[in-house]
Length: 255
Image 1 (cartoon, rainbow, N blue to C red):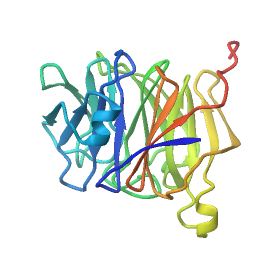
Image 2: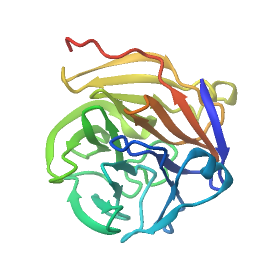
Image 3: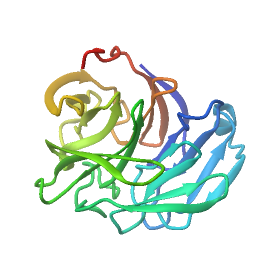
Image 4: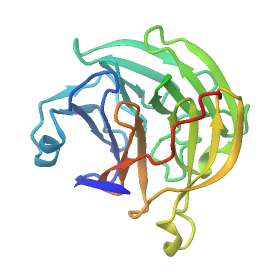
C-alpha cells in the first residue's frame, strides 16, 4: 500500500534517493514545462515535509520530463528539446558528461500517456542505470538501454512490443522492466485501479503480459522510481508524494 509523504505545490515532478549512498538525503525536482532547471536537496523526509531545504542546485540545462535519477553522487536527466542525457555531479556542481540516446524520440513525440515531455525516462535498480524510451524504428514502442554511469556508454539495448504512449509510467527492478498501464482515458471508477500489465526480462530477452495491481488513487502518475537500497517505489501522483513498498518477491536466482 502507498504511504502518503506529503502534498507538493506542483502537479508533476519526481523525487528519489541515491541508492549507492547511505543516509536519508532526498533529491526533489518539481516539473514545469520549459522552466525546470533546479534540483532541491533535503536532508530527510521530515525536512522535505516541512520545506527545510539543505541546498538547491542550478542545473546547466533545462529539463524535459520527470525522468531524472540520482546515482553514485550525480544526477542524470533529459536535456530539454534533445535526446541527450546529462550527468551532473552533485559534489562539484558541474556537468560531468552528456550522452546521446541514439534514435530516441524526444520532446513529446513518444511521452508516457499523460505527456509532460516524458519521452526519455531514467531508472536505477540492482543492476545499474537504465534508459526507457521509444524510437521510430521500433514504431514508437518502448526501447530499453543499459547506460554505464561512469563512461556514459550504452552497454546493451532491448526492443519491446509495448507502445510507449499507452503506458502511464515504467520502472526497473532486478533487470526487469515493469510497465504501468494508463487508465486516464477510461472511466473514473476504473482510473484508481491501474496495473502493471507488462514486464520485460533483459536477462532472458523476453517480455510478457501480466496483471499486478498498482495503486493509483490520485489518477495522474507523473513519476515512478525504484530504489534498490530500500526496495521502495518513489511516486509523484497528482500533487501527492508517495512511497510504495514492493510486495512481489525477488526474482528467481536461476533467471
